[in-house]
Length: 578
Image 1: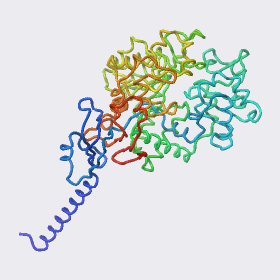
Image 2: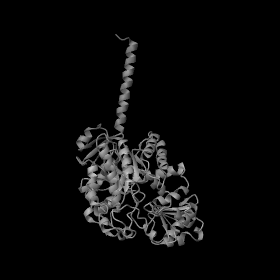
Image 3: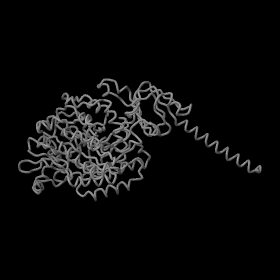
């Protein structure tokens, strides 16, 4: 028999435990919410629609009928009437340069500027120089300059290599970020001279625009930019953090709650990209899942993959950052004057096929090793020749290792040979397409169609063909090359309509397939489908509320849809204007 003192002690312990349980139970009530009276799209093809969703803390508890959802949480869970709006899983972008995009937001970016002539560009540059917004040290950098100006090189030199710009270095980046132009002052600083050009092989000389006497005209493409990029001052932690926060705001305003970041040295050093995410995480601000894929080259596969694994180890404790794959360029871009995309048939003006940026045997070696190490392979492939070469390398990995289940992916695929359509399904390769680009645009037509073999040009962004052959298509933007607005991309994918008309209506995508592309399929591309990408019990509460029923309205109304709020891990991170 217990003594009175022992009894009182036991009673106090039990009472304290009961109080703790009551407190925990009360807290769970405070964090429970039921969202109902909405058009719920789950992103799960087995049960794509529902009436209501319940969440507790940062997790989804139940999705289904309102009656079943209500039973899954406590009676006093907060009920939120969504008034017939659309509730979706958070959008996921499977190829977006968020940190680069953030730096663009705080720099001199010409994306939305009205530029019809070189005079307009001069006015924009003058304002960017005077305000300081375009200054990187003493170099004036203007980003996202429209493609039309690359047929006006003489005019650019007349405007930006004389007068006040005779000694002022100027760097103009074309909107594709694979092509740029440097004025004479910057060329001199970079050592890009006639004597330097003469030392180059024919292949390397193709990365520089030159006149008949080998004088550089300022155009630099892909590898040609490597002599200029190091001249730009390194970004401070303060500026990186400012850019990263700007990127978060931008993504959340568009309903993007997770993304795949292909980290290349094309614009920002890979270490800067990763450092920006760490700066966010150290302050508790990186709540979105980010899969970062550092760039490799397939020159020395073993050493390159060792370096990636070291990065993964160095950043393994950064919350929500996953270094789980590698990014590699198979080729460049197709537009004139760059023409570095690798095609199966030569460009009509040069007789060249473009540039395959890796040796196929070395690339196969890289794919086999990366797949064996559990690293996802993510390949930039624009031309149909590059697409085939990339698929061949991944096929080598599947043959050597069996099906690892890793979602290797190709991105861009502007041109695909028809006999490669079915290989995406056969090899389990995700097609991460930027279908905002799949509408007729006169500037791009003029920079591509005259120079390409008709048999190559006809299979441009063949999304429906890949889908109909069983391929998995994920949604991607390549921001800041173009907007990350999902609704704009879906409108273009569904209608194939652009400023210059309709681009091959037979390749139009079903709208619902595009919503799967931007939810579950992109989560699959990140290899995170077990925790995000659909509205399902146990998954993270990454949700978005859209202002209309985007599954049934006309395409033009989808294009105008707005995000009312964005939720990441159970917390509202963005509220739009109703």
